Image 1 (tube, rainbow, N blue to C red):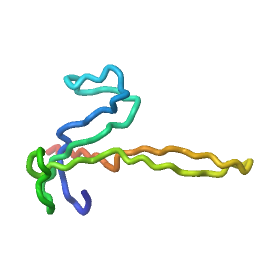
Image 2: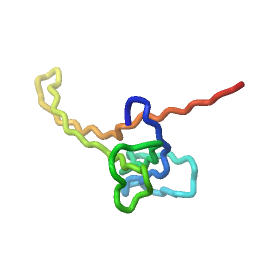
Image 3: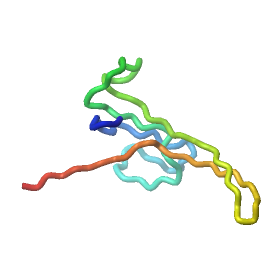
Image 4: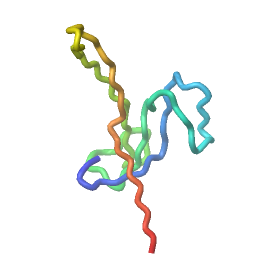
Length: 94
């Protein structure tokens, strides 16, 4: 997923906590990050995953706990979640 490799998002698995999620709607406002994103890559260098189409990979939500110190010297734990993915759209107009 780097150095110019391209792919297409084929499915997004919404978080189970998400209320009112509808797979038939093309645009949805979500309160939680997706649980998983399926991407069909133009090419891969690894073998095919069982149960998935060829060149399809899974991107899962990454959760990380970080401890910070406030200005008052108190320690607080913060939970950070993200899907490590940058989406890019390109349009050509001649």
